[in-house]
Length: 229
Image (cartoon, rainbow, N blue to C red; front, side, top):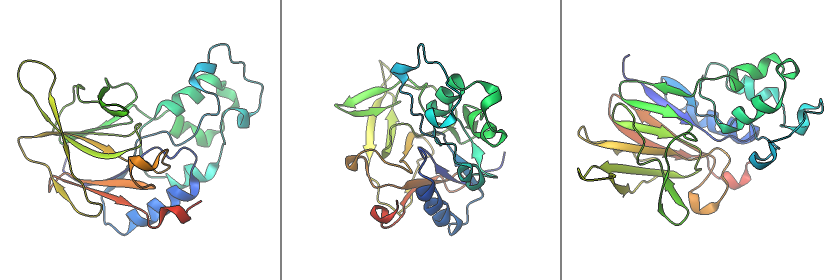
């Protein structure tokens, strides 16, 4: 597979207007492919409430079935997240509109020679410091692991020491400035979220452009995000 420029979005959580703003920004960036790493929907049933849940016949009890999300992501390479998996488990198949199926039944990952793109929820996560998590111990091919789930714009370089878990080096990022990825390095790229959950995790809506040919990652965010409802 030839190297391409991927614009990567993730963790929409039903934020249709925010997703539209991100895709408007991406259209100006001349990428070859857009990849969405899942959690497009927001499941209203918490993971601790799944056991014993009985579907009552209304989709809106489980999630907001907004067909515009599917329209906006038409032609995008889709990966499923934990929200999609939970919705799929809670709603009987015959109650699901056909337009939801590409989103709910998307594969778990997208692979290239350069990187593994995934949502991240099945990965082994390590708490680097209180509240700061990274899938530093994941086994992935290529040079980079590109993920979502943790709603943070962050970049890490993994440095194996030969005796145990890799040492994790946090690299500085500046939005709009490409960060080179060294040919002998292995990197974890946390994309950031379309719909953020905490100000200390960086601005949102955010996305990243992974240029596999140039071996760079560039973080972006819509401006000003506070005006996007």
